[in-house]
Amino acid sequence: MLVDAIATQATFKFYNTAGAVLDSVSISSSGGTLPTDSPTNPPGSTPGDVNKDGKVNIVDIGLIIDHYGEAPLVYTNADLNNDGKVTIIDIGIVIDNYAI
Image 1: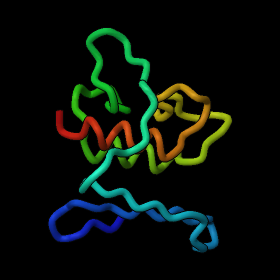
Image 2 (image 1 turned 120 degrees about the vertical axis):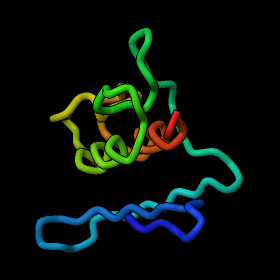
Image 3 (image 1 turned 45 degrees about the vertical axis):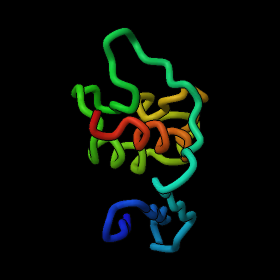
């Protein structure tokens, strides 16, 4: 992940096992909003808290990245909008709720 000096943009690159870039996603916090669907969360849980430790932080982003593109799901907690796959929308949900 590459983050600019004032943390307004993050770039995520996804590699295959040979080291070739499969996909790259940049997310910016300046102007506009990230695409999100409404996550389904049990009462008392925090949207974006992938590992259910009560915090939304870099660990949660890492878990989403580790499981990005999964369908069928191996780690269901990473599918925050419950659409059956781990996508940029799930990363957006974590970022929208980061450090709550």
